[in-house]
Length: 119
Image 1 (cartoon, helix red, strand yellow):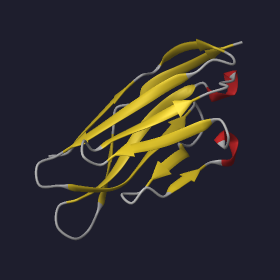
Image 2: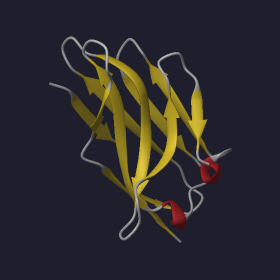
Image 3: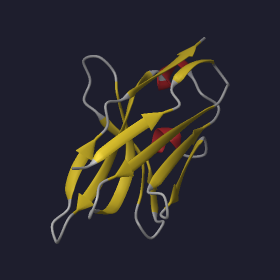
């Protein structure tokens, strides 16, 4: 059983900052890439940022220079520091963790956390 717990969403004014946290847990599981995705009504869920177990990062172009993803492998936690937020960043943000019990990793999603940026 894998559990993905997200926290840190909320309401912020344009230009402000928020920090999202994702904690992945599961007895006997190892976690590969963990990432943050976002979704707005009527649109597909899109990648925001992802970090591998070795620390390699991948960012969507629309967040480069504004968001920073980091990881603590000892706790299986991933944080997303979001700076210079704009109303266009308003979305439900989801954490996804690729977890493997033996060989093949499977994706596990959190419930999502709302981020609202007011103008």
